[in-house]
Length: 55
Image (cartoon, rainbow, N blue to C red; front, side, top):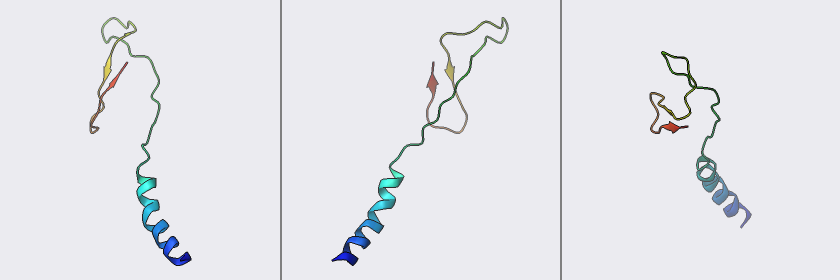
């Protein structure tokens, strides 16, 4: 019984660990290119990712 439980945990644990999302925080100020004015609403697009970030 103990061996069976160890095998089940060994097989299920990677699935649970993979389900965690990687989250990171990006902080900073976005400025207008011409007037160097802070932008209160902006969309930041980072190449090679499947989502966009809105401020």
